[in-house]
Length: 102
Image (cartoon, rainbow, N blue to C red; front, top):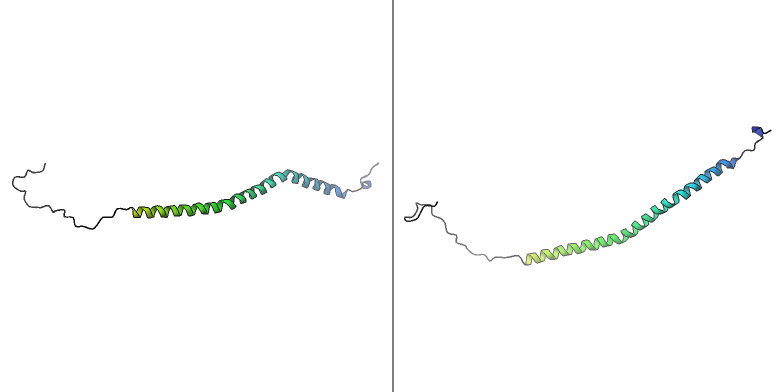
């Protein structure tokens, strides 16, 4: 008959279950972890190309704005200073023979 005291203890049983759990977790989580690492790598590659491209577009836009403003100033209409006689109205009584305004 087997008595509880006659059983041999298995110290590796709990350790084996823990190792199996770690292995199962590694197998289960490996795909998402690799996907995140790959995504970070892809975003870094895009960022490495995007930031210089964004800087080049900004420089081109600022240059374009400056060229357009310079052309608009050159094409702006300038008038020569001159004296314009507009004639002042008289505030006296109406002239004889004129008809009153309706």
